[in-house]
Length: 364
Image 1 (cartoon, one colour):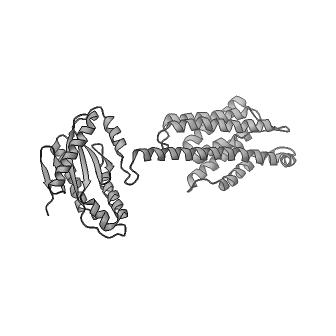
Image 2 (cartoon, rainbow, N blue to C red):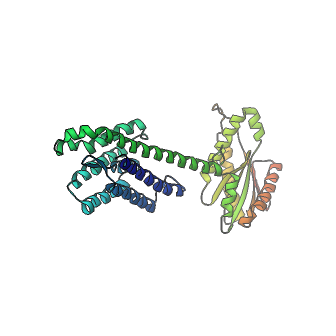
């Protein structure tokens, strides 16, 4: 009996490992594509069917832990995965195995617990805790085993003999699977966060230079692309007058403005300090100039505030633009744009400067 219980729990763990391998191959854990959904249904169904052939014998009664995987599947993923799994396993139990225990085994061991679990899926507003899980799986255990009292001769006496073993084994299987699923989700979320922090600037949330360079170099061709270097004018004075926390807030607010303009044709990142970098796809350098100047005007008119909610006066930027000749010539384009930025700074700031010497100064 102990060996059969451990065999059922081992099946649960093997099922979890197989499903976990699917999730760890998925870059975005919030996505579950069709083929991955299909594989999860197949793996869960196979585990349940395997349990049909590995029963836990207590006297003349046969039990297994089939209820646990299908209800956890229903609670986590809902009807999209639970209903196909229920159909597959029910048909197998009826058509392949059969026998007098097929009807109660499917109704009380699979169907009713699954539909209750689907109700939990639709009603839950917070993650399932261990305490809530304990009460829920106590209910599932009762649904599975209490019918013995009513449908089997001397069922009450039999139930009194084995209820503790069934209760402990049922909860041990549910707790073990729930624990490892929770652990896997935490690991997946941690991996997702680490990947995000590896690609993004922690203060502004924009791409960092490494990711920006990688995305540029992955382009098959530069096309009509231009690199723009943006620098906040007199940022040191902003920090000195309002404090570094307020300076950080200015950086974050400015990054939010850049994000508004971000699209398939405009990629932005934080270059370092108060400097930002853009890659603008435009038909000409004049169009790139117009796009950059719209951003400059938006920033100039934005009501920047310090951390106490007080206005800190006008914040402006200077911009230098240069053509990106090829994806592998990003460094050269950055140097050229930086020279134009330096020119914009020396000529009065709050302007966009391009290679041909065309610049724009804000009206006072």
